[in-house]
Image (cartoon, rainbow, N blue to C red; front, side, top):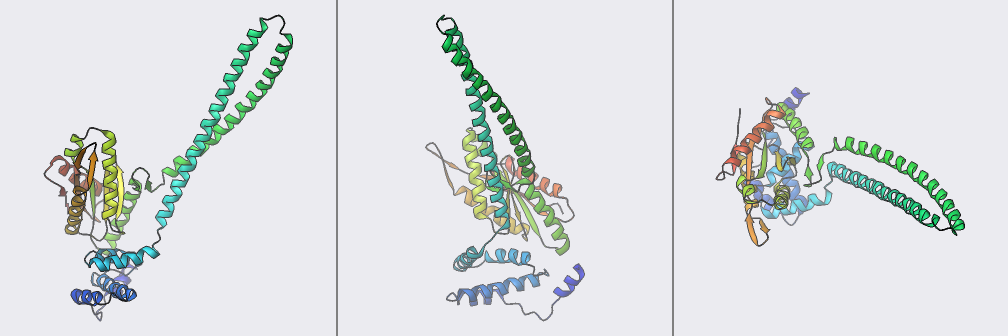
Amino acid sequence: MAKSLRKRRDITNVSLEDDESLNDTISSSFNDPSNDVELYSKEVLDSLLKDNLPPTPNNFSLYFDRLLEDKSDTLRKQIKAILQLEETNNDEATIELERTLKHGFVSVKSILSVSAGLYKNMTLMTKILAKRKDEISQNKDSKNVLSVISSLETDLGKLDEILKKQISNLKSLYDHTATIVKNVENETIFDNKYGIYNKRYLLNKVEQEIQLIKEFKHKSTIIMIELSNELVKEIINEKALMLMTRTIARLLMKTSRRSDTVAHYGNGVFSMLLKHTDIDSAIKAAQRLSELVQNSNFFLADKEIELKVSIGITPILHTSTTDEIIVNALKAMETAYKDPTITYIVLNDQ
């Protein structure tokens, strides 16, 4: 199949538009949004063929996003507005399902807590009743009262047995639900704390990208990001550090393209998988991210804190394993982390 694809992509009669000419044509046709998108889509398709890539929906989407970065603000806003009207994402549906499941588990846990409190109060009531019975028994004229209390005590005893069985059943249901949720969490793709993908999803995406690069020979890059060492030393308040880390996650989502994968690797370390992006383009992305972070205001009490990040950049090579690629990116990030004068480091093991 791979050979037939390559043969099919060996097209000699394709006329590729000149970039400046196409930009001029697009710029002159803003009155017709559908025509703008049609012309731009043709440029995307021509670029795919020029790079010897099959025009699959996935590749087209990647190039669609990448080439859009070099267009005018007006065209970008116009096309993004159209995309927002039709955008659907299966991952978003999965994420929403994960959230719903976890909320349901929290509710089950709350039910168990309330039931345990009810049982505790019933036990306390039984003890109070026994105490009052002892007090009344000291009075010689209390036979009728003692009889009523004994009857009530019997009824409470029966109720106590019923509650014990129900709570035992409820606890079994809770344990079963906890097991199900735990199994689901092992298959989740979303990090609730930061509102982005998790480490498991990232590793799967890197593995997939390695196989795609092996087949189609394009270039992709991964970057690792965390708060700078200088900033971490300065801020002792753990709550403030958490808020800053969440700010970084939000800014990563803001600066990323639709084709990028933004994930929380763990312990406040984030990652961006930049598909069809070489090292030079990844460096530009890192610089944009760094500038965006530094221009974001963060106030701690009455003090304004300038956010800084340390970034590691490494290419995704089909000759490397997922672990090797991740380790290289982390090494690069740690090198930048140790030197406050450096924003990013590239580790390019060819």
